[in-house]
Structure formats: C-alpha cells, structure tokens
Amino acid sequence: MNTATLSPEKDPMGTAIHEYFTKGRAGKLRVHSSQFDEDEIPVKTLFRSFTQMPSLEQEALQLASGKILDVGGGSGCHSLALQDMGKEVCAIDISPLSVETMKRRGVLNAQVANLFEPTFTDTFDTILMLMNGSGIIGKLGNMPAFFIRMKQLLQPNGSVILDSSDLKYLFEDEDGSFLIDLAGDYYGEIDFRMEYKNIQGETFDWLYIDFQTLSLYAAEYGFEAQLLKEGEHYNYLARLTRKQ
Ligand code: SAH
Image (cartoon, rainbow, N blue to C red; front, side, top):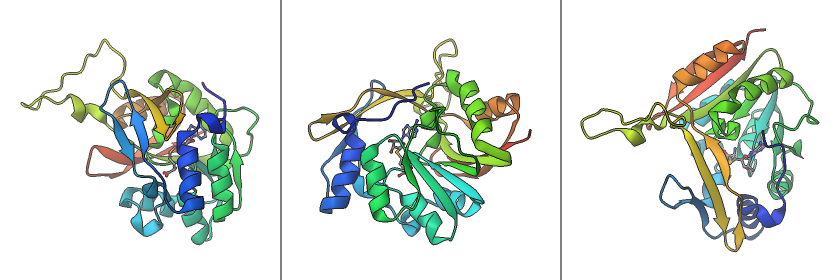
C-alpha cells in the first residue's frame, strides 16, 4: 500500500485545483492511461456545489452522520457541503496544494495525510470516498489491507460510503456478451497518470469494483455491503457497515 504524500512538482491535480482557486480559471487537466484514450477532467467540476453534484453524491452527503472523514477531499467540495449541513467533517488529501485550497475555502479541519499512513489515527462514524472513491484502494489485492484499515478508523457500527463503477460495459460485445479474461487481472484495475501544463504526475493504480465483488470482500472482513443507489452508467453508491 502506498502511504506517501505528493510534492507540488509531481502534483498535477493539486496544482490545477490551486490555480483554479487563486486565478478563477485553469488549463487542461489531462488524464493518460495505458488502457484508455487520453481524457480530460474539467477542473471546474472539482469545485461543484451541492446542487451541481450528481444525485449519488448528494445522497452520500445526506446519509453521512456523526464524525465524518472525507477521503481525498480535493477542492473540498464535499466537506464544504457537509459543513453547510451542520455536520462535523475532517478532510484528508495527499496533496498539500489541495489541502491548502480546502483550508482557504473554509474547510475547518483539512489535513495532509494518506488514508493508509498508520500515523493517521483518528476514528470516525462515516468514512466518505467519493468520485469513484474505491479508486484509492488501487488494486483488488489491496482489499484485505483496505478493510483492516477501515476497522482501525471506524467506530463500532460505523460505515464507509463510497461510489464506484462496474467497468464490465467496456468489455461488452455487440451481441451483449462479455469478453473478460477471467485468468487475467481483475478488469477494474486501471493505471492512470495525470498531466497539468508542465507538471507530470507519477503513474498510479485506480480500482473500479463491481458491487458483487465488493460485497464478497466486505463479508469476508466483517462488513455488510448495501447497494444504496445505482447511477446511469454502471456506477453505484454503496455502504459498508462494520459488523464487529
Ligand atoms: N473527492 C474529490 C476529489 C476526488 S480526486 C472530489 O470528488 O472532487 C481524488 C483525490 O484523492 C485527489 O485529490 C488525490 O490527491 C486524493 N488521494 C489519492 N490517494 C489518496 C490517499 N491514499 N489518501 C488520501 N487522499 C488520496
């Protein structure tokens, strides 16, 4: 498990977020992957307000209760919306530039920390992982470490609320059959690399996981998985509740 934080010279997304906040506009935040064509994240969408969020995210914020951890807070959009609702939230991010932006935008408790860094030791009632939040788990092989970590950070009966997508549709043939190599790596394991102006990020692993696979791991590690809502594009919102 990667437990590092980012230096600004290798932080394209944090730089884009910081620039958008300080200058009111930003350039192209490019996303490269060995599995997909080049794509772009409109930096403005990282600053979405509650009303601009997809309904899946709105529901996640409404369900979050008690002391909340916003994992990978980015610009702070979710933490700010939670604060507006009168909820208590701590945002963490591996990007010091994003954390600085969150603080300047009014997030009361924002810290530079990696979710998997053992020195981060607080406990929470709800852990939020949004914008394909399962991505931070990286690879399917990290699921055991992920659940062990969630047990450390969650209060008894606490829960993780996350969104993800089943990438199965990418492998769907015209006749509706699926061309998945079951002997190969799990089909939701994607590598990404970001680029913003002259700043090149390192390649990182990002996990998209189907709900059934997530439920199987959850059950094995003492969590109950609940499908809260399905989106329009094979995406969904799930809650993982700690049973012991
Ligand atoms: N939640 C925000 C940002 C999503 S992008 C939104 O929905 O707009 C993912 C964010 O997670 C980035 O800001 C990235 O720096 C952060 N991140 C990635 N890995 C992390 C980790 N292991 N621990 C904490 N934050 C992480």
